Image (cartoon, rainbow, N blue to C red; front, side, top):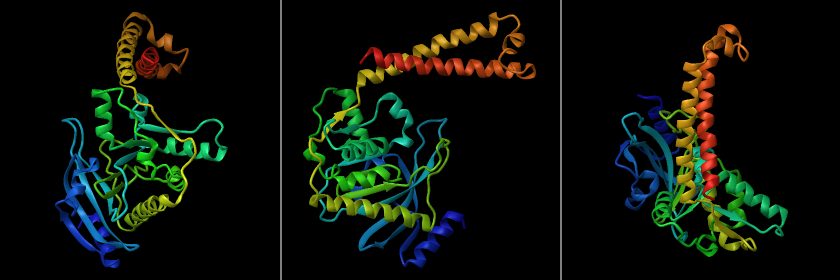
Length: 317
């Protein structure tokens, strides 16, 4: 028996939860259409039960690889029904896991307050904006619509008022989760990637009692959302769309131009400097001169891409 199967079955048995080593996916058919599961190809270690008076499901799903040179990975998610709680469809993506998207400007919606607002409220919003990217209606559909039909009106604060209450923002400003999605009467919370630099083939799964902690976080978030109706909204709260398709295209073309130019510069250094060892001895120890050469070429190309992307975004502001 594999370690994850043993740990998860033991945890389910100790807490009198229902356990299925193999699964066809979430029991609720509506949940199967959520963005989180859009590339799911198989499921395992499915646990069903009640936690703090709420029905729940915890399971691992295998995410289908994107291409021949990519990998399929396993991810743990918690699924909770909203019951009578009426919430709009939205998604929250942790910014620490979406650095590439942030670099391209795909940062979702930013919540802002005027300078005259209290320092506490502004710090609260800043912490939330640093921690999560907010997408109203779902991340994939929102980004696709912004690219295909730019200039669409932004959603009003009233549409996502439950997400913008102080209690919810305070919880989310310090929460450590993976992607969060609310749609069709369900809340899904994904396990967080704890490694700062995660290989593309690395699974993001929780085993045994680790699942209990993610389940507690999901229940705490649902409690905060349920209590939001009793809170007053932040005054003068506004929504700003940080996504600009032209800026994205400028970043892509700028990075490509920077790659071409820096590659030519690297080739020049590689073929037209007669004594490469002596040249790079000024920067590196003599016995490491050739290692320094290839490191310098790599940094030149990388720097060209970064600078080109930055210039491209600035030119299409």
